[in-house]
Image (tube, rainbow, N blue to C red; front, side, top):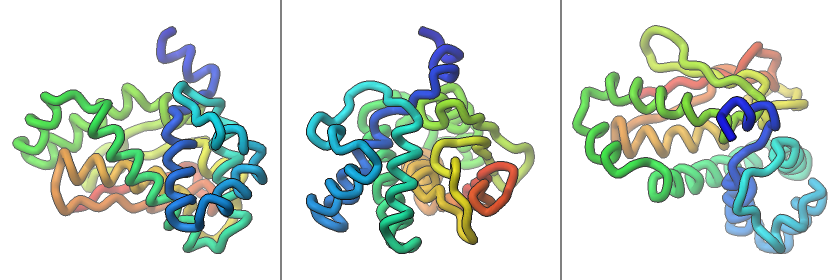
Length: 200
């Protein structure tokens, strides 16, 4: 099955479910995590955590439930923790060992561009039917349009802390130890895309 087929199906890697479950349990306890998954119609995912790609609608529903049931700052902190956990998993299991060796030895701008090119090739695993693109120029910026996290969200604040933290974990390990990734714009606040910037 090629990348185009995955995009057409709108499926997301299971970390978007499993790491949020871990972060919820760590912050709120197992009962609260189960209540939130139940509210999203995903309680079965706690009993049988997914090991394969999941429909992107499940990720959207889970993040919608998170935002609906918890204050904004709490929900974003939990989403960020899930992102850090996802980044750690990717570094341990998905990033080839030669990349671990090579990228930190390159100038940060070069390393960032190589990393983003690799992320772009696998964007269907986290953006589903959304579109990922790297923006030209410096600082390093990239965007996700019609992504599953902000889909259907409306408010005064960006809501994609999960993505920002995942990217930050990768950038800190592979590009620069003081890298930060922030969300500059979000579709939830009316922007045309969720835009992220990597700084160091």
